[in-house]
Image (cartoon, rainbow, N blue to C red; front, side, top):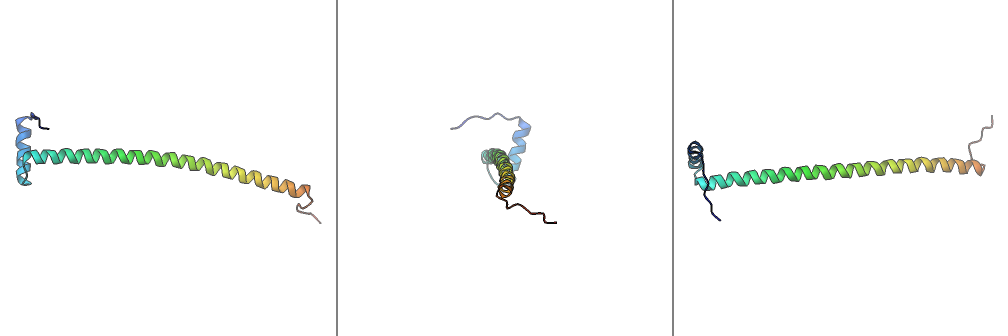
Length: 94
């Protein structure tokens, strides 16, 4: 697909000058600029999505960790109560 791109004369001159220095056509130079911008934009959006996923996973792991800690505390309390009921608790023979 081809289309006409209207540029101010100063910008056209500037782009033409840079393209000559890079030994590419102005069209190729502009296409490369667009590709680079799209690639950078895509990369940035990927990084944002990765951070979001990592944050979600971190929250989930923190909740699970908290639940495990609470279960461990209850397990310890119940184990101590059972020991006392069975007469296996710490004896104070002073």
